[in-house]
Image (cartoon, rainbow, N blue to C red; front, side, top):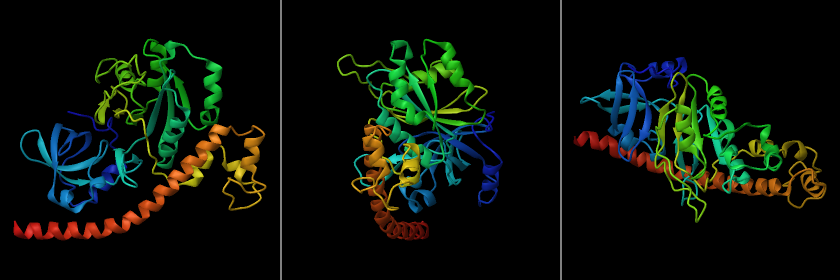
Length: 352
């Protein structure tokens, strides 16, 4: 038997289930997603589930289950089932789908904390950490910055200076899998029933960190290339692992590019310490680019605001606005397509 409370099941989710037409069926949480099926952990075991026709033909692909979703399913054969409904998502981590203008790729749902993993070597990238943090804060997910491979040696003051604008928004852990006390400190920060998603580029040590937290090898790991300094993509899917007597960990495939889908200027300004400055600009609609009396530009000039942080702010703001605009246009097209899909599903049932 599985204790679903450890997987994050709670009273709020239970009430949501009661309001569905399928309240009498069992529920479970998606632990792994495949192309056409989903691994679901339920109270009485693990199930491999396919989608019902209503979901498959009546919803858009980004509304299909993702890792972390809570679903209601109809058991069929032993260890198999059909997903009949998906409970409403909250705190969903997503990113801009690679190669598209405005499509979202769902990474994980019902996330409490995002462990943003950066290694203390050539892979350390403050701008990438900022990008991750913008996305998770927009979804009301608590960001936690994890610096791995501390055993390699690093300039502590240099790292602290580069991250000082982020340290107030996220707890920072410096870890090494060869120093058990650093892993234990991180383990204590994970509460029972919490869902933790690990995000970061390939080679930063996400899978090794998950294994260290679990005290055993549950995920495959790989080495860094000596020639490129980059890691290969060990994780090729989003996979959930239960941390004994605690919460669940979701490892994600390494991403070198993480297109944001956040359109909130407030979140971006607050995270990069721009909000207090822009309140004192001469013009209320100041864009912080070339206006006279701009407090943000003045802060860059006198060194109060780091040039790199300012440039990152402009880049992320431009990207977020572009995504929001194109997404608005896409929603109109999706409404039309959704009507076509529903019409098809209705006629498909009649023909059956």
